[in-house]
Image (cartoon, rainbow, N blue to C red):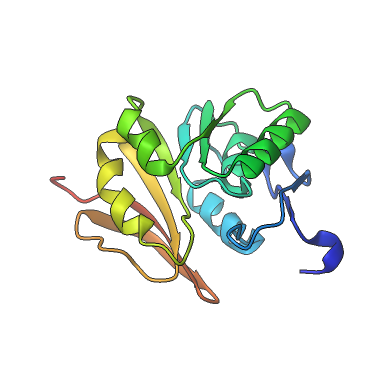
Length: 184
């Protein structure tokens, strides 16, 4: 990534296509690459119309803003770092994306209080953490019957309760679209 494009991401599809979103400098922020986002939204048919989406580790907001751009009814973005939340809110205002709700919280705290059901959950936690292993079991009660869960990681977590619908790899990044395994 060149110096002039550092700390920004481009929306690749939908109503906000080509819009540039800026985010603060942080080693913990690792936006999902364009190619991976394109693949994910191809898997979803490029359309999130009517979906209620959860972007649980929002970071740069790349995944959540892509879902909103593709006409999701609602996108809840969860981020714990206050400077990053401020950037997400700035980008939300820039796009006039009123279907996005941004909450400053940890994923665990948010899920412990959440009563909502989601059609699409986007999970891209920090790579050096065990958060994916911890969060996946907690997600199940927050899923609509036809929900999909996208995960992005360096190593696959325990997936015995999940069915992998699609998967890919880009460099050191593994990613997959999941649904609950039959009978779960």
